[in-house]
Image (cartoon, rainbow, N blue to C red):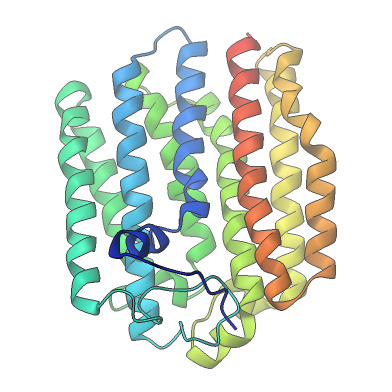
Length: 300
């Protein structure tokens, strides 16, 4: 059964629909990209602030869209193992959610126009693509999440594009360094989705939602999760060896016991037990990201 949360107002329903536990996925790429820009000698706080606001809005808009279309496709029911969903619970109507999606993505677009005006048309295309793919994650004729492409989407947009795009705001260039720096961000944000899909394999199979976990199985998901953690820990070493970052860049290595604990949980837990693993994976992504950002600022 889904984790039931007592809701006393419509505002609380909208907060629940925004999925606050997933919002580190929006924060970390902007923080890491901004830290690298600061490291490279150009940093405009207002650009990062607006980028952060847009990133959060796009994340929320994507979550709203997921809630709507998973409900319409029958993926979200009262029997699901994950946290309560507002449409399945009758807390928000389909029409209200449709309006909410338009409002949230519309606000992201409007705020993003400031960055387009300040930096250039490249940012317009990044913003438009981010909104389109946020919708296409569960909506449209070929929903990414239903066709084994959700992990790739999250890795690219909430990892590479979010981080590299933020860096571009400040220096107006794309570099190999910004790409390398984006890899831990994408990896650990994708791990949040991996745990979610791993938990929901049986329900997703019944609903025809062909996530990678459904297509390739539990063992694949476990080792995909481990691979992304290893990738994340490899990048600070690469930055130290190839790009001459100082030892501060190894600050994220202090999270190694946390990472080992999460891997053990993934192998040991099932069903609703994985909700805790999901929550801690999101927290680990944020903690690693903040330490990584600190290491970037101090490391050169």
